[in-house]
Image (cartoon, rainbow, N blue to C red; front, side):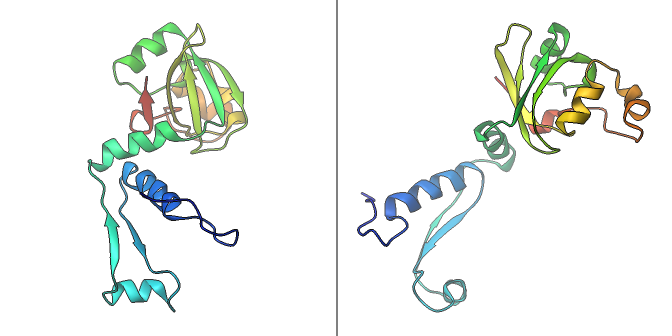
Length: 165
């Protein structure tokens, strides 16, 4: 029922707002649509102005996994067969199992995880920059400090920050 913008001056109609609500609740967030043309609209909502609430339907952990899966990847990591099997058992991605790192990403940014054949095995949020990941790829976690010159984290991508499949 939500339509497109009605004039060339508006930034979005109800359709745009409903699409934003769908994204918010899928990510585990609540969202409100309220009158925006009043002075201090958030204060008006807090004071009891009419508002339409959209509430998340699932637990925050599942919502976080959906949010990670929906992110646009900034790079790729290719893993060997042993790492692919470990990921399938719910383990974190360690540097030893990584054979190739491509793309330009920073810490906390999303990457795609590929198996040896180039198939998508999953995606996740990196704990290292692309440059750091290239340097430690193929090495054991206990070698990270010597390679980087500072203590690092054992996993390139922790299992809590990863979606398999």
